[in-house]
Every structure is written in C-alpha cells, then in structure tokens.
Picture 1 (cartoon, rainbow, N blue to C red):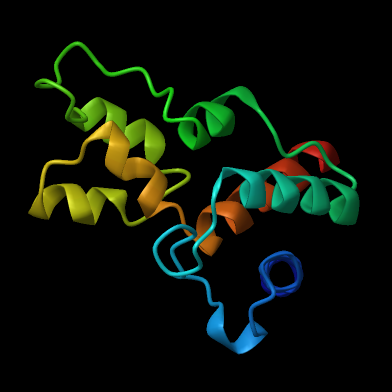
Picture 2 (picture 1 turned 180 degrees about the vertical axis):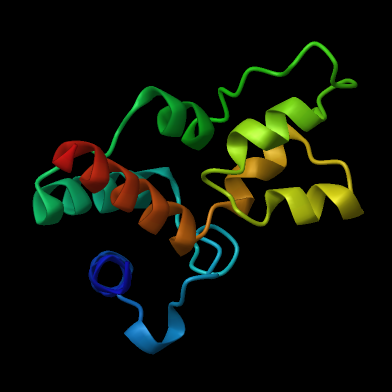
Length: 130
C-alpha cells in the first residue's frame, strides 16, 4: 500500500498544487486539504488514469455525495452503529470518532482522508487480481 499512498499523494499534490510534504495518510480531504467537489472529481479521474481502474462505485459515490442510507435504528440524522460499521471500510477512524460523539451524514464528507482513497484504490486493485 505504500506505493499506492505515494501515487495518491502525487496526484493530490498535482491537482491541488500543494507540497507533497503537507499531505499524509491522515490528511482530511476537505478540512486539511480544502478539496471541493470539482477537485474530488479531478482527483478521481487522475487516479483512474494512473491505476487503470474504475474508482467510482456505488458505495463510494454514495459516501462522496452524502447519499448514505440511514439505518432505521438511527436517531434523526445521526448514524446508527450499523451505518458506522458499513462505512468504516472507507473511514477507519469512524468507529473511534463515533464512540466520542454521534456522527451525522453531513459530517461524513469532512471525515474522508487520504487513507480513505488509498483503501479504495487498494480494494479495487485487489478485486481486479481476483
């Protein structure tokens, strides 16, 4: 995964014109790097070209668009334990964060990290090899 991380950092650095040294695995896409929806699309297209994969899939698209179905057990707009479990594959720190506070759908986009993107690419590459 180190090679994937290195490539993702290169892509994000180029797209956002940010020094590579300011980007790491835990960098939050929105809060730390200032990514907006157009930047996100540009980065996704660059990743697809670099890795020769289709990054976009229904689960990640839903998360990126905040079109996350809320489990019937959740209160108001907060994620249930079931929602958090499902989304943890993209946001590994979500479980820990949810223990400290309740998380809303609107807060999810701000929790996406470089690690989220690396995990997505790694998962896609592994599925191609299988």
